[in-house]
Amino acid sequence: MELSIERIELLLLIAAVVAMIARRFRTPYSVGLVLAGIGLAMLTRTREIELTKELIFTAFLPPLVFEATLNIRWPDLRKDLPVIVSFATLGVVLSAAVTTLGMHFLAGWDWSSAALFGTLIAATDPVSVIATLKDGGVHGRLRLLMEAESLFNDSTAAIAFGLAMLLAAGGDITVLGVTQSLLANVLGGVVCGAVVAGAALLLAGRTTDHLIEITFTTVAAYGSFLLAEHFHFSGVLATLTAGLMIGNLGHLGPISSRGRVAVISFWEYAAFVANSLIFILIGIREANQNFLNVLVPAVFAIILVTLGRAVAIYPIAALFSRSDRWRIQRSHQHLLFWGGLRGALALALALGLPLQTAQRDEIITVAFAVVAFSIFVQGLTMMPLLQRLGEIPKSQSVTANTKN
Image (cartoon, rainbow, N blue to C red):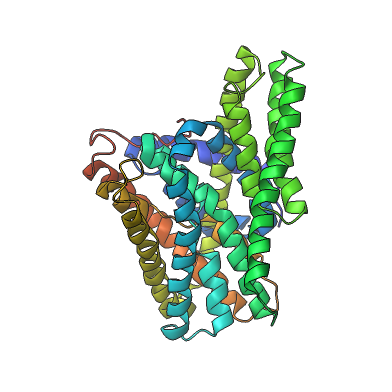
């Protein structure tokens, strides 16, 4: 069943109430939304609402990615770009390899199913990571590293997942082909984002109407994503590029002073709406999963994904340990490890598996189990960990909003 205006209105009302309750009881907003979704599915017919790959990719990801990158300053990003790229490439490959090997040898999955699962679950999810950081009011280098990694690693995960799909279909893979695919995915996404953002800024500079300026940024966010996806490039990288350009060219470029305030406020609200709907829908879908049927592989998967994250963080951080510029302090390494949440991105890839894929239902259910662990276990313990490691004051409450 598709989302209707009536259902969206109901879900937004619930989201607003959950936000108030989450703030009152100092719990992560995203956890409250998933619980609300599970409750809705149990008590009403909302369990019939479908969470699909298309809905996640075309409706929810663009505003979340755009709003996050709109507030990232390019000088800060450039300073840590080697670290971020290392986590987003080598880190994803290492994580996927650990999970793939473990699911084959421990869970007994065939190589194709293990590889599909290992690649779709390897990347940290921008939706979950950004929501958690905003809940905690985290700022500075730690937030930059976590947000940027979760935004950049999409391309690596997409390429790896595509290769796993090709292997499952019996196709041939070459080093040259992989390299060309990765370069095309990355460069194509960046070019699409730059072209659309450039056009939006050019048009925005010809008006002082803040409503029109907001409209141009909306076109940039969604247009860059859809254009890149149309050519099978990285939509996330395209929207990331558009957001960086609009947010850094003279801080919103030629957009008027009134328009700048309006644009920031609009995208904060757009991110709030997207976050609210996506976590409620995850909860609704979680309620429909029968985890008892895949209990053993689900437990293995949770352990392996966690181990894979450790392998992706600590060895790579060690590579930069002798650099004064790029060294990552030990507490930040721990937070990067435990804050590597999985969420909507992994579910979108799993739900998009072809119907004829071997063990498709099992892969989807196990992916939901890992996401549930991320949201409830890692999500609920991130705030105490942030406080314990001194990233946020112990007296600080969860803000349960999307303000930066």
